[in-house]
Image (cartoon, rainbow, N blue to C red; front, side):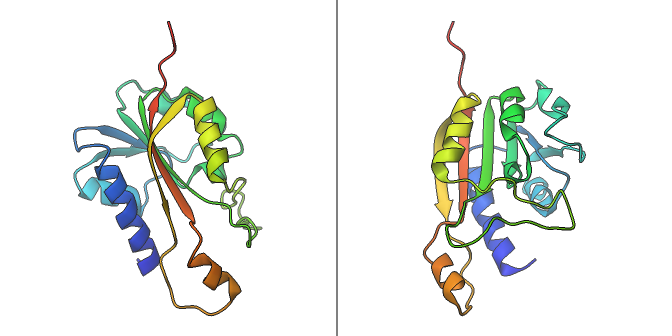
Length: 176
């Protein structure tokens, strides 16, 4: 694992640990990956989705036994994250997204439809999406990328620009 990924995983695990304990049953949106394996290694009860198209298939988030849903850098890959956010039965959500950078285009892999960023959010956009889909942000953090020594305008700008945004949310209870 490269230092940049290791740094991001350390930040993510610290945020996760401060908002849930090992007794929480976690559904991590996305197929099993190095971060979900690290979560399990640290004692969290984690299950992952199975590679289904989460824009169309919400069945995984309808499980009433799930305490917390995690969505680490997945919503930018979805065409309509609003829909699944509304369907989540769990009352807690931790999600991270890459932030839109004014000096760089959105990530777009020409060869792989799953490896594209349909959204790169500004903080106010992501907050609005969460609010309108029934979530209240309790805590959030912004992170700059891991500092690598590189030369050029973009690497210089990245040293001062937040790239990641993570939130802990709770479901807004409907009024009676």
